[in-house]
Image 1 (spheres, rainbow, N blue to C red):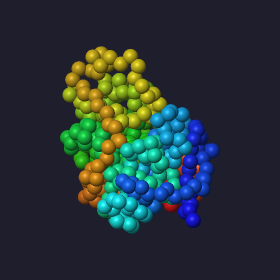
Image 2: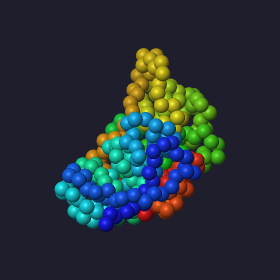
Image 3: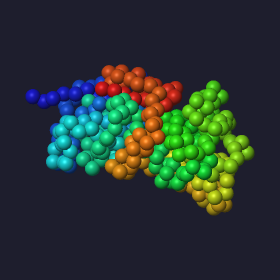
Image 4: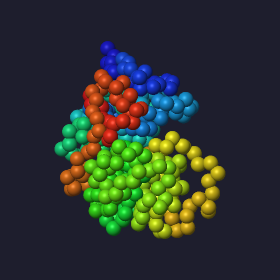
Length: 321
């Protein structure tokens, strides 16, 4: 008899209010893929983008179960080296777009895109790590080459990724400047550990000084201004798209990138087992607790999606099963 599971299945643009759970068959294993029993997953801005409009694109394999990350246990290792019951994390690589993702009780995932987890964290805590910490880690250390003597600007800092970037940068020993466009959120940046908090009213040029590295989370909408706000020799990493501008029209790199400033970007589609373990080890070494803004039971996934769409949760949204 076919085993059934609960999952969110989408085939068209769907608001959080309209998200519901469906009963579908548990995926059957195949060579090169493993079946993971999902224990918890984090939610991400890119999943709201998928539901809002991206799902209309042909490259989304519809119907699709969204969700670009999860933590759980190997339920069926198929022909892989994994063992049943082993703790794992999975993220990106087409998850929730090219193939079904984590908004489900089970996920069939490519064996090479599943990573071992050695951690004493709870399932909910572990679920806050994979995508957000990997993106912050890659942005800060691979792209910005962050070190203790840097002054880091986090533009659009009052989001899950912003809070994690602040946490990691402070653990390294950096001075951190955070921005928000809402005055009532300035105290949240103080609480997160920012040394300086700036109200962002479209332009911050002249409002900050001494910035050597900048993490741009608003995106193309403000990246030119951010480049004008760093010191010569500084690096700007464009990672987020909170500003909902996705393409840079009429971009002239000679005129738009200030002399002596470097612009880079982080694309989080290629995690490795080493990087994921480095992140968990770094957190253990610095006794860092994963940052969670709200936790929902899977049966309340609709409420979790509404919270994601509203953007009112200060930190990572985690769903537990």
